[in-house]
Image (cartoon, rainbow, N blue to C red; front, side, top):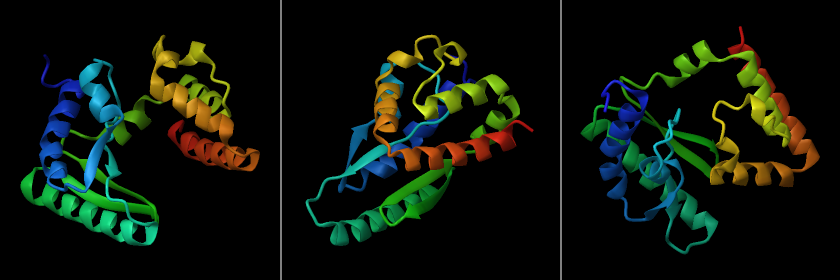
Length: 177
């Protein structure tokens, strides 16, 4: 395998991160691209490690425990690996660690390669009526995560969908410059 390929670099990054994540026994790896990456040789632009908090506690107790565990993971990654790890909290119950390595410059690459066709596809997808002829992969509509996302979009309240579309359009318009 080409060690310079994005796929190889993503797997290498994932393998370097998982041992540190596994030290926190309050989480279980629950699926998503981190697992599917090893099952399907399907190129990805990013890899998420989806974790489930396994203790049965009410939200008021669980959220501070989750935050503390994620903080320890981020600190451990900074200390034990050659990555940058930043805890990002978008809301009290939405927390993530953004991990980057020297080889991970995906946003720059994405913006440089982004086309009108990509824009049109993503907007149609977020609308809930994807134009599959614009998709970057011919069989993408058969992937479970894609089907789930479409179901979630269909369940969105109309006002939320309009808000999400507006937000996506603003971000993607900047990419087309």
